[in-house]
Image 1 (spheres, rainbow, N blue to C red):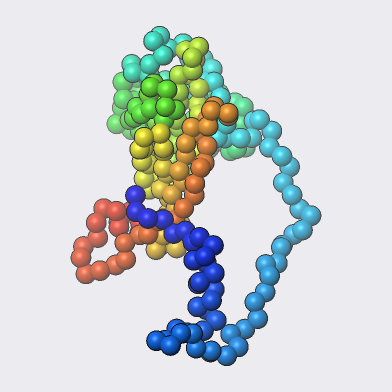
Image 2: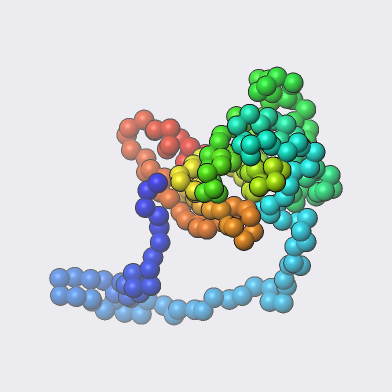
Length: 238
């Protein structure tokens, strides 16, 4: 991935200094009063959200009910579609249609899947990808359920030491790209500024037994030129 937009404290101080004047060959030149700096103004003081209950945390780890224990603790040979079905079914029941844990359309979308191994041509569940994200030498199952032409439910599952399958990440979003490298999973999504794309980097957290957000950065989208847009630039333009 390309370098991220991040300013360390010295660099930020330099930027602020330059805004107060223009540099020439002899140093900084006074440009006069550039306006008064104002401190941030906090809106709606005293309004705070209630703390989430365990059933309101979509990213929290959760054993998927209704699935057999995995022999050999290996995801290879596990029916990815069956895992997603069981997870969506239980999350929908627990969610109660509020959309906190799973999009209300997810269960309905799953009805498009047939009994075929891959769910059939209309099945919205993406092919499962196996990759070790926890660093224990065992591969996790990474998949997604497409809700429409834009939104998707990203889901990551692991096999626990007792053989039970647990969801360790669920995330709803516009998946411009999902990348894995070593024990990192990065999710690329568009922003309101077409010049940038957000990159959420998730890593395994042994304390919560789930994939936790470790870094959120912005990445450049290629600027327009006379050259036909590459696949990456086409993604950024969405």
